[in-house]
Image (cartoon, rainbow, N blue to C red; front, side):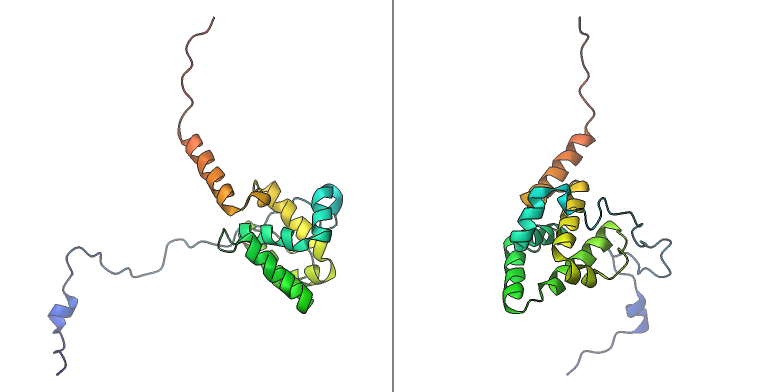
Length: 173
């Protein structure tokens, strides 16, 4: 009823076209990202007055833009902003949701903690924390207002442009 067990010789015979299994310890493993400093302070909200106003009146938009970039497009700005708004309106605990994105962003970019945990920063000063994160993404070359897809296309175009040497110029007068 059941198939016969393979013999020891058949079980150890190499399979054509397959590499042998990897054994041992990797020579190098990816370590944590080296810590760098935030490009602006937590209370530097007025460095970008437009962003400060947007975040004070519609933090869901600022948060949604940050979430889309941090999640690399897996979460849309609209979806993240809507979840943030629902949490803010019905529970007042939107800061718990937003602090998780601060933690993700710090891990991805190798940013240090600012002296207290991410949730404390978002609980005590949500608008300042969102503005700092948004400014940091802009300082790193992202344009959060354009969304992940456009940022990824721009990065690919810049990488492709850098792969080809500039065209040789002819002699001029």
